[in-house]
Image (cartoon, rainbow, N blue to C red; front, side, top):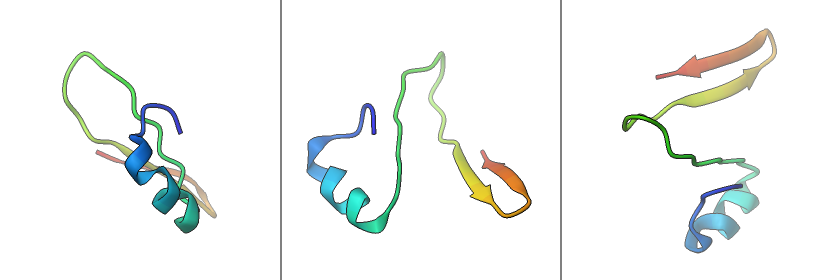
Length: 43
């Protein structure tokens, strides 16, 4: 989990959630879900 604050790493790990945070050209929130029929991206 790169870029994730230490304060929430334990909680995310307990839930089995992988979260990578990176700097991009503009502010955005994107979630990629690994579903049975392939990846789904929510923007």
